[in-house]
Length: 393
Image (cartoon, rainbow, N blue to C red; front, side, top):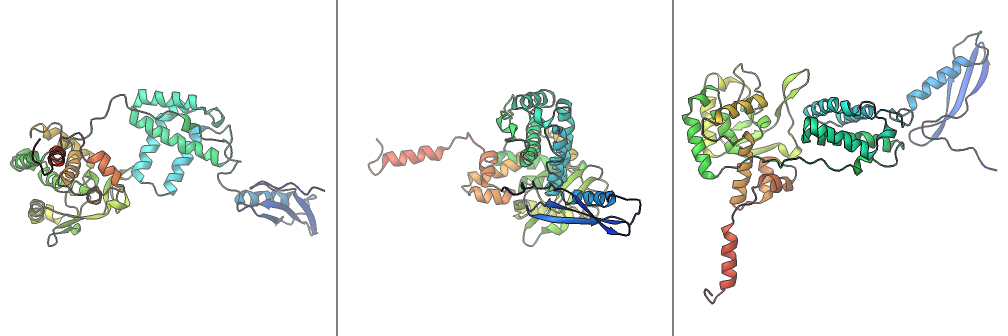
């Protein structure tokens, strides 16, 4: 004889009611918890002589069972669930996992744009073809970067449907990756001669001095820091005796909060101590002696003594670089320059990754160390191999 069919997780069996006297009923049932174990759950109803069939006890039991069900179970996600609802759930899960506030704000903004193309699409309607069409519309309207962010959001959102056994596979995996119509140029690295020339122009520029660009750009040249890391530097991070600067945080803009300094870096590898060249030590030592700038908690504050906005800082540099004769040099160019100089000196990619705060050495090699240069050493090496001990051919 077959036994009772197994309950699904989050499902309850038949509710039974037992009268205990005095207007009090006891409601009971079997319930399969999230750990897969089936347990007997019971609740007493309030004393009520008018409750002839134990409805109050049954209502109390059903209410208690709702609290035992997982928040994202099959009852909350189905084929009729809107895809954008899952996008919102995915972003909230990222927040629970500790994703940075800046990233979450970016994803929420992207989601508002994606909703124009996906607002009424349900999970059961989210075919690869329909998702591909929406992402291509995103690229046409808002650019390739936002389209790629949308693809990431949709993949995470529909994975929730897979996890809840609503979909057998994630349809986003069959959607072609979003590519830019134009190949990105990337930041341009400077040669050692160009760096020396730029430093001379920086120190001679009255406009740079008035906008307080000379010292922070000098530190970017000397360290290859990210803008957010540079503007988060505090005087307590500077050790003049050891000739080092410690990277302990970053400046970000949070929605509804404005600019904040957070004691975290982009990756775990971002928290690091950087040795400074002599010209950077001299710059910081002189800056700390100035009556206003040396009295602030951060090394490079705004004119009001508050945190300086990384985006505004980048805009100031873009407006002044034409005057200095370096129109194509972005603030990120200095970061790439440091990586390239490390490579030119024959230092390992691991040293470059540690200095720049990259979590993966491959990032330093693939994105930051310049490619396509002429390596005369290779020709010299082949000459030596062919020549051997017999002299030139």
